[in-house]
Length: 400
Image (cartoon, rainbow, N blue to C red; front, side, top):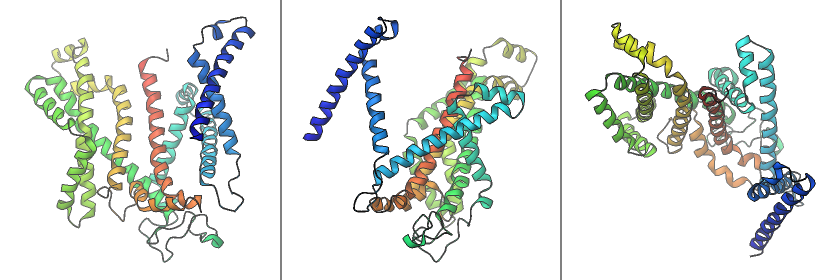
């Protein structure tokens, strides 16, 4: 009960402080428009933001080990998050500064127009791409290598149960977690990218085809897409993957192929709707009619006339679709029907290491092991969305 009293009392104090903030601002500035036209909710938000910032600073400087020598998991995780935020912001700023001074005239202009969020997103995507392409060189061990040392704790300190050869420790069967985390970028991100490309090839081609020909083909494809989109995508994918598991049998690589085809089929319906909608707006243009009068074929109309004018929305949708495909693959792997071992996958790592959350009170670093894979998934999703938002901003004409 006392907690609720403190919460209600704190909100009441912030409400009074917000009213006083606006009143004193009006008096001090001679009733200038900034304070005169400020709604009370905005004044309340300013005061609430200052209070939350002060509480965050206070919590950040709390001791990370209590008087009994037991680490505080909450303070430790919060400190890591704050440090990571500032490191990421500094890295994005340096990357943007480098891009503004190095490269071609076009790239330098692009970086000058780029917000810090887009710079951060591009930097993260480049890091993930490097890890995925050169995983075999960067990773200290193979993703399938099993060592005799089982459940080695992270940190590399022998006194606390670690091993310098395994900075993030090993899992229940002796596989190096750092290597599997790196190879997870190659498998999860690489398969997601290939699946998204496949979905765009099928969905985009059929969407433009339906927009160009229309008639009965458009009706058949549109109604089929409506039926598929009526089913929740994750449940539909899980159902089809369960059936595919029986077909694949002991051939685990075949299950991965089925997963790519199933997710590409499901996501191609969303791409079809977008491509058809964009294509419908383009086929009525005068230059399309002129191309038809010249006797141009269907392939020329789709790939030389419609596709170049639909690039901006399709690129933006590609980023969003990639995020959804990426999360779907991780979800299926978490449920045990996605990417199969011995291939490393972040969704599987979250499931296998989830039990280490119970050690948060004794070793925050050990408890953070499942959060590393989950954080890798979340970080790439946020980065791609930052870049997509910037691309939408550029293609919308708002920059003008």
